[in-house]
Image 1 (cartoon, rainbow, N blue to C red):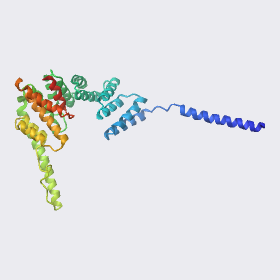
Image 2: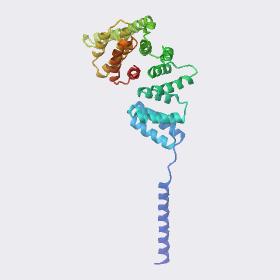
Image 3: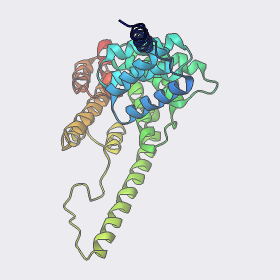
Length: 331
């Protein structure tokens, strides 16, 4: 082979080797870790996925974040997503990691507290909610309600549960939600046979709430009639959701204040046409009836047990369902 051709061949071989080396080196090089800005963007995207109920997508994204840089917020979001998918043990593990990494992350403790309470770990829920409440310079009413409920479910702490539930009164943004704080206060007192202590006050509260909700219905009703009149059409008043009606939570208040019988309350609950809502109403009705009998003396113990069991059997994701399961163990 002439010298010129040999030299050219060597040059080509060297060039090819260099290209090969560069290619191998490029693909063997580890990718650059995400920056702080990248991590924050990924966290925001995980929140967006949660809002759109893409819980599996949120878990995948938080796994990528934690693989690059373990973060308490990412484990919190992952725990929330796993809970929504029904993976309660996985959710608890992720929330535990979040708290272990950043002990003062209140949202993780609150979420774990509710998860523990719904799973029957009332003592664990008390620990989480108490830690949160104690860390607050000015107690948050919603967190006081959570602690009061957990103490009640744990048993042996009814006076302390009353204290925190009383502090929670009026802490919700909506009147209907505040009514349920009153109802849980009633159920604690009923279990002690002391519901008369707030009876007159509750009558006033229930009457005011009934007036407020009926006014809203009448306003909607008149607006619908006006719209139909403008179109020159008559209003079909036979529809069950059109005419003003007494809301369920007001009917429950009527029972608690002695204005509606036990049988009538259960009939109203069973009359609900939506299957899921019906189970929720039956849970609330049986729970409150059960707590009434729980405080009415030992002769009514079996009735209390029967109603609390029916409330627990609805298996709805309601505080009353969790409380029913907890109080059954204490009867």
